[in-house]
Image (cartoon, rainbow, N blue to C red):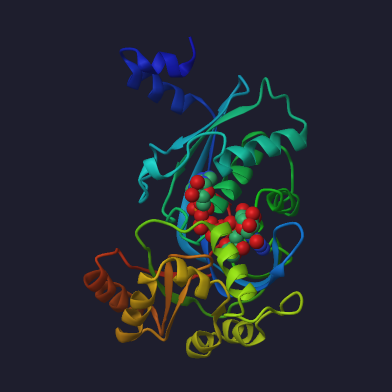
Length: 333
Ligand SMILES: C[C@](O)(CO)[C@H](O)COP(=O)(O)OP(=O)(O)OC[C@H]1O[C@@H](n2ccc(N)nc2=O)[C@H](O)[C@@H]1O
Ligand SMILES: Nc1ncnc2c1ncn2[C@@H]1O[C@H](COP(=O)(O)OP(=O)(O)OP(=O)(O)O)[C@@H](O)[C@H]1O
């Protein structure tokens, strides 16, 4: 009888608790991100766009635990060890889950025996699903780092970041964390210094936006001439990078940009009023995070961020969160 079948019988909880303390497990935290700048080039033949991105990892993190199995099975499910802010029903807990794909890819590349090396991957999510904050990417990064430690692969962080690029444009950054510029599809990351913490308020939206649909809407707006089409690969936003490096929140707020904002707002028009509300409450600037619909607002300092978050929670009914970055990439606890 498998553990899961055993779990369906009487006395299931006792069996599970016993297994949890005796099976090896590794827990990793991996951060959600915002793009302080996201410049998007024209559509490429491979269906992707070249980007010039300025990533910031924030202290809204996913907690990923890999529990060893000796039968080669890989499963994903909601964590029972750490609390989650996301409804389990909003996440695909099957082989399409990016964390499942990450563990499978790692096992294959390292050449481990798929009949012997398995893991139950448990995820406690804080990052909104399909919110433009790279939550699934953080889960994939967490699964790579956790399974690599569990299976003792000996891969370096650089090697894990290279594998991460095969899983999605945002996954390498979730491994690396901190602050970084992203080139190519966004997967070629290079860390940059950030002198002081950036204080932000995040406003999650009801429901999500599909990343390919937002890129598709950008292409349409460019085709019809509503937005200008850039010539080639975009340049990094040097003003935003300088403001981040020197720790000047007002200069950063003024320099931020996101080419996906117009298409995200076109697909989700309510975002426009929510952006105005943040400014009304004293945020230095508001912007769509990545492909949206989560909004980010820049605050002068931590106290201002808390005040703006409370005011926005009251006015919008959505739970606005005061966060800061940079924080570490995927880290074993
Ligand atoms: C919007 C961002 O979050 C900004 O950091 C990323 O560009 C998206 O990263 P991601 O979700 O990891 O993206 P992937 O899973 O690699 O790609 C999903 C889809 O988004 C579109 N996509 C993504 C990245 C990119 N540079 N160009 C694209 O056109 C493609 O249609 C792709 O099929
Ligand atoms: N571990 C996961 N957590 C959440 N969604 C996942 C996961 N694995 C796969 N998905 C699928 O991916 C879709 C996008 O999820 P995700 O939360 O990563 O979006 P996102 O934050 O907007 O991504 P990005 O900012 O990287 O474009 C979801 O709608 C879901 O179907």
